[in-house]
Length: 111
Image (cartoon, rainbow, N blue to C red; front, side, top):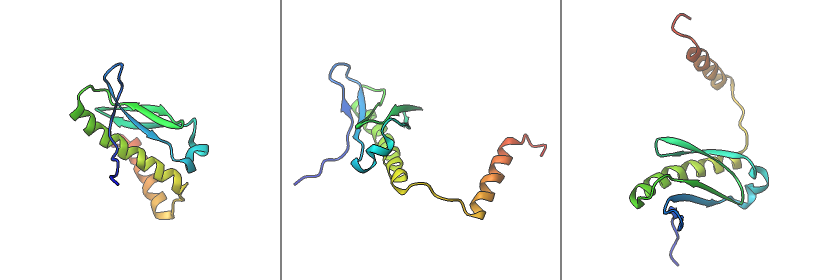
């Protein structure tokens, strides 16, 4: 039995490639209706989660679609993994680093 690998789906009416991925059953009730932002080309695409997540890869070229699909698919898989893991708590050290980086990012150098 051969394994199917994830690959871009070509819309037959427009010729534009899309990422299409079924939402994992164990997460569907929790995440359905939420939005997820995926990297596509030089920007991002926000898509609503339903039974299937579908995002345009904004290209009609098969080679470029495969590259964009790999990036967007990886981001969506990391999103599923984070949803499965649930929220994580910050320990004192991580919280301090986060606060320092936030403050440092807000300063214009005069702080």
